Length: 301
Image (cartoon, rainbow, N blue to C red; front, side, top):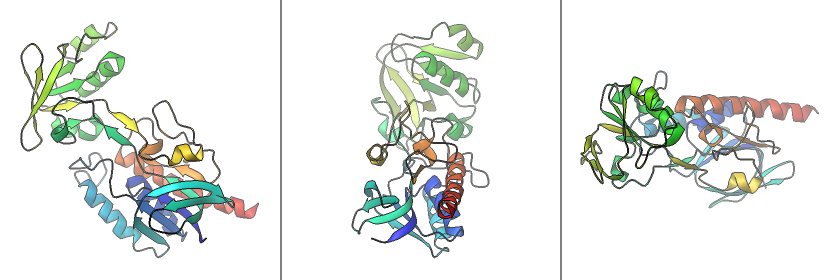
């Protein structure tokens, strides 16, 4: 079985960033990516210095092109099917090829983000229904916005979104459980609608037109922010025994070490808060540095 320095699972911003650091350090790296990115529904990347507005697919294409300049880095479109500790490293089973033994395995496959099951949400998801105000708030600043949710988390989200516009409606989709936050919301200019939602009305271009309720008038809105259901897109972390947080992310130290020898995680897969492309790139870079230094220390011991 061939031995390489690292297998990186995931060809998004975190995985490509890790591979770039390792490639520049002349480490032998295999990047495996399914070609199904978590942000495939997004039309642009927001908040990325010098690249704001770039399409996610274009960002990945540029990243792959830069990796191709490094002869020790190989990028394959494939799925990592299994992984287990073996011979001081990690044996990784990859579809359509022989298993690979790597000194390090990086889980950078992101998270799967599923919107709430609101009727009509599908065509609008990533176009006018979003989950991250920091990623998409600027593009809908000053517009008629809504937040879907209930409880303290929804209150925080509504107050956050109010920073981008003075027209925000918090749709609790049933009796509100705001724990006395009504005065705070009112001071921020946030209205509250408790009526159950019937469906979202959208245009052919993915634009949200209005929120339709079981009772009461329509809410004409330009964008809606929702809380997503998040999950690991594969079972590698569980198979290897990585610890997961209550939010479903892989628990690591600041440099991506999982506590399992040779196993690291980077990007959204291991980020509980403040998920963004910019943070994923930085996280991936840190993991690349850590792998090089950890392997040097191991070789010297």
